[in-house]
Image (cartoon, rainbow, N blue to C red; front, top):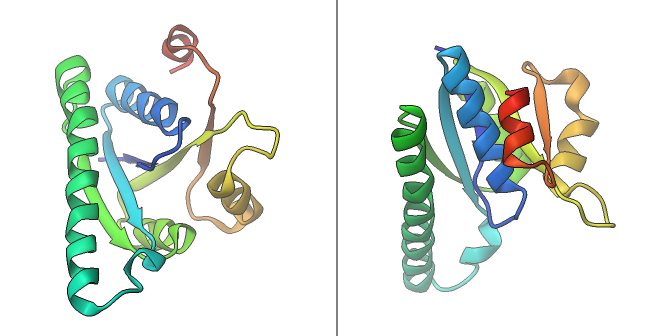
Length: 151
């Protein structure tokens, strides 16, 4: 089964990327894999504190994921898969794509800020010519109605 890989983070544009991935998966019989990356700088403390912080980060991610998973199950009949990795976001996204041959499309949300579409979109589009899968970039300002028409 082809999976749509989407990144769960604290950005506003993440919501549109998740919506789009769920809609596309629903319309094409695919799956959704939600990746959340815990950056290593969050754990630059003593070992005991770092372990506690890591566990708290995982709990936050799982709670955030469950909101989206429930929506996908109830609205689209899709059971998304959660993957949590630790490291630099771009490296971990590329690592996940390499590790899971069922991933067919990377779905990213583009921010609407003056500074640009966001760090993930900026960094990953620079290397998009050498990626093994296509990237779909969903505009952060796209309405739900428009997205449903396109997907």
